Amino acid sequence: MVRIKDDGGTHTKCLLDPFDEEASQLEAAARDVDWEREIAMQLMVRCGLRVDEIAYPTLDRLRWSSSGDCWLLEVQGKNTKGSGKKTRDVWVPEEVAENIQRFSSERDRDATESIVSVTTQSVRRWVKEAAEQIAEDGHGDRWRSVSSHDLRRSWATYHIVERGVDVRTMMSIGGWSDYSAIEPYLGEATENKIGQSMAD
Image 1 (cartoon, rainbow, N blue to C red):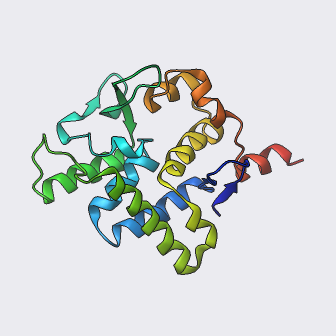
Image 2 (image 1 turned 60 degrees about the horizontal axis):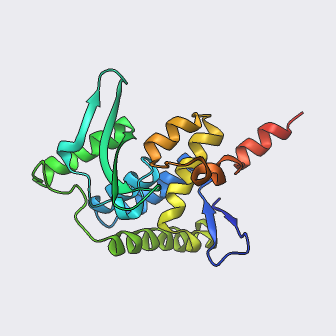
């Protein structure tokens, strides 16, 4: 079930937990409306892109790294140490890379055309609509609080806390230049981690 963390701020923070199950629910709800929406969700929840980075990637920026034995996607995003944009490579799960390639081929997208060709505001709306649909389908009112940034937060927490991916790798693929920017994700225990840690 989506976990809500209210730290007294102006925004409610949500965490998809269990991650894989709830990420899949969100992708499916988006896919029911349009394939492009599913790709946008996958770029945020499976690859950790910020909502304002979604329109940058093009098919020609998706590449197989033989030395890393993984798919990477070049993204231009927020520079957490200054102004302007910062270029980084993000890790892309194989099923997401295949979905992007199929989508681009079947939609006859040029290799230099944005994979997801909409505004940041549209992507935010897509997240809200998908989450609202999941709530209406009886999966809990907590979904109504899910935002686009919660997808990135859930991605980071899952990989750091559940999978134990080292912080330096996460900083590199997530685009955090400073340890203090990623630090909030380090202590966020998932329900699974709580259960494992507290078991006899």
